[in-house]
Amino acid sequence: MKGIYTWSAILAIVFASVIGDVLLARAMKQVGDVGALWRRAGLGIVIGRTLGNPNFLFGVAAMAVAFFSLLFALSWGDVSLVAPAAASLTFIGNAIAAKIFLHERVDQRRWIAAGLVAAGVALLAG
Amino acid sequence: MFAAAGDSMLSHGMKQTGSISLNHLQGVIYAVLNPWVAIGILLLLAFFATYMTALSWADLTYVLPATSLGYVMLALVARFVLHEHVSPLRWLGIALITGGVGFVAGGPELTKHPHGDAPVGKPCVAASPLLAKDARNGAPGVEV
Image 1 (cartoon, chains in turn orange, brown):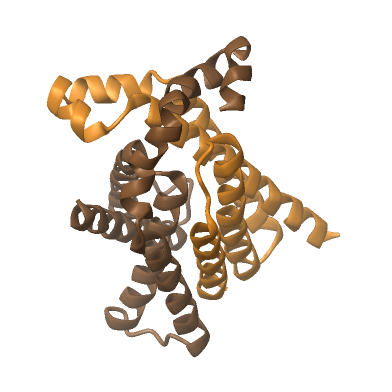
Image 2 (cartoon, helix red, strand yellow):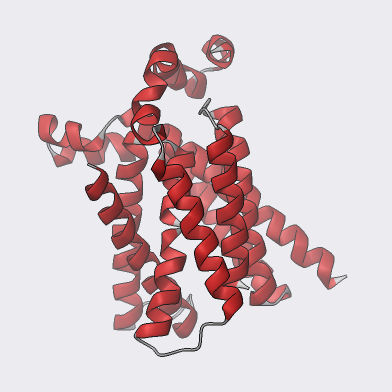
């Protein structure tokens, strides 16, 4: 029973952080190249435009949800299961979500990279 | 540009790992006043700012593997600064992550992708705000 709780919390972490990452990436694409914008318009504009972007705010909210899901997951399961499972599934989920929602060209090279990193993170965090 | 990217990735990897381990040590919620946790939070904010900057000019699928170098840094810090034992399995993990990051950073993807979105992405960049914001413009955005 505890396993179900733990795994649903892990899935919640993965979903929330993938959503958060996608929203943040989209927000920053809308803001544009921060370095160029900074030189052109100043740091205040960069910060204002970022914080004023609704995608950014929702992204941060999703990250907060992911964080609290992590706390729940940790209260139900072991760190040695929760941390690697959530981290590596998030990498895979992000590759899929970036392809679908951000229209990034996720080619073979990037799939392999996502897979390698996910496996490596699972080994390291475990 | 590559060096700058690598550097900022590494440094925010460091920052991230630092704050993560501190948070774990101190307990998350009610130790905010503890100076270590405060430093950890500051570093986490710095990580977040650099992460956002990287996302502004690179793909999510490019930035994410790169930030995972943070795990590698954490392991190396544990080994050489804290003199912890790093098991062979973890070295394998380090090798896998490094290899994966090399895969993404290596090829033409680096330059092609941030700008590589531009050929396809000229409409795409224009469409994504619409896509995100209002539903009626979302449909053409999806087709792109």
